[in-house]
Length: 434
Image (cartoon, rainbow, N blue to C red; front, side, top):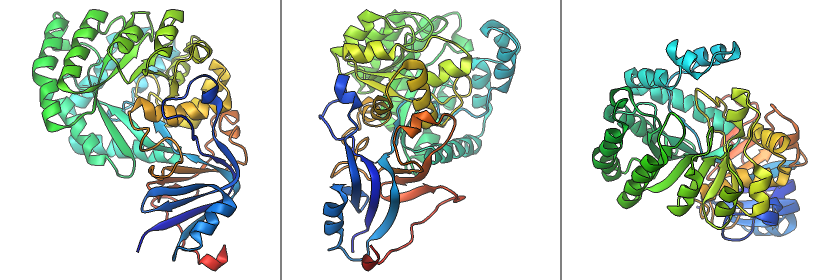
């Protein structure tokens, strides 16, 4: 007997159907809206999606179909959060408080804060404590509508701590969200290599990345190329080594200073170039002629109290494929809320509500090389679906700081339901009750 689920009476069904590749230009604003729609799910995958009358006729021939009544609300794909630092241990509250008081990066570091405080804490943390922290975060991601989450290492910067982090990611993958692991050994230079960062690059290339690849603990390798982190030449060496070992590539690019990292990402065929607050017209032109996704992270700009957001309109109008992600991390973007990210994207980067939805779903999936599995509601894809407590999808970005996710479904199973404490279930409905 198959496990079947019918989601019916969707006032607005956002399918995100479209071209096979990432969405660009006008296509980014097409959410594939079906009025009065329904979705039929079988064994965790989407079997059919479209007008309610058509889909409900198909469901009528299936025995024991579970039902979710969307009650004329919005049904859409789950969010694909393609840039997070999921496992970090403790929040950096000292950084936050000192920054509010006017302290700069150097003052915060001198007081024991900054990224190296996370390095110290994570190296000392027990794996079970890191797993507990990550599981709490995953619950919040599900509550706010994420169904797939990329997760980076990079807060230990040594062999034991990085492997510990990646093992925690593997332990929580699929419980209940998909966790896509990234090795970010090149996050910053660890204290023991402060006088010789090139030696650290050598160690990652010859020792660390080969071991991670052998143990299949990461899909992507990422590098932070910016002032105070790694130079463009160091980033190139690291990324070329990672590519030769079989990793997919990601790049932290053009966040605080313009380094040329976005164009390096394009040159090397990276899946994404992330941040891009300092990106210029040449970067936009390069991204527009590539399959590298421009992943924008407005949460970090907001939390740091800065006023230079990534030039989303320039990127979109030039033809770059734009994605949105939370950048969830303890120092600069402590949020699991993709709805808040959509609101920031619309208000501060002048994206339209439809563009923001596409960027947070199908283009996020492309940034993880998973668009064949998730990011849109199409037959054969995973049943990663949201029901919103809203009648119009534009409410997602209109209501800032408000969570309109009523139900989160991962592979056909309800993993969050508004008003439920944990592990909600869907009641069985008889076919003749439809």
